[in-house]
Length: 263
Image (cartoon, rainbow, N blue to C red; front, side, top):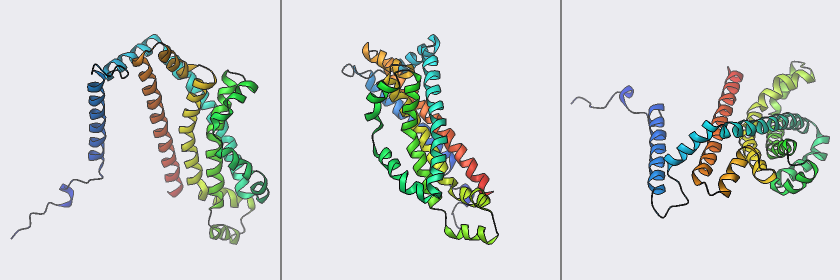
């Protein structure tokens, strides 16, 4: 009796890209449909239908309010993130290779890492003001410790056998760190940088909501004060989309960098 088993090429791969994207698109459509249905119920006055939210977002971009707010938030986030990345990677490398830094600086880093950044908002408002400088410092504090801890952990986790191999080839200390330690620690460093992107977005919006009403924070607070639910939800969705795009971009850069390392 002939076998009726389908060839492997004809079977549906449960992890394949077609099924993956089908599930993603279906999930989004189902979520939007449920949102629209619930938003149109008479008793759900605190949730606007998705069509009204989309209209509010279109109007916000057409008037320029959303565009200016998004650009301002991006400026705060990017400047703060770059500063945090430089400090986090630099100090993390130092802690990873220096016993002195591990005994003196690392305990302070752990204390800062465990401290809620929101606790510092009142004192930041006093010493840095309510304008761009204060918001940038808050973004730095939101993401620098994540980058720093991941970088120092990556350096410490480099297998001693790799370092011994480098020493056996009479590599200088600089070459040892540049060609052995840093490549081995790269996954940790890029993980910290990727997580830092998400935290930078949260820090920027938090600063604009709690430190000074500006950019996307101003849009959200203004919509809240006038009970403009569609605009409020449009601002929230815009912030989520910004985070999604930037996190995808960070994952793409991470994947390309690690693939280049292993090529």
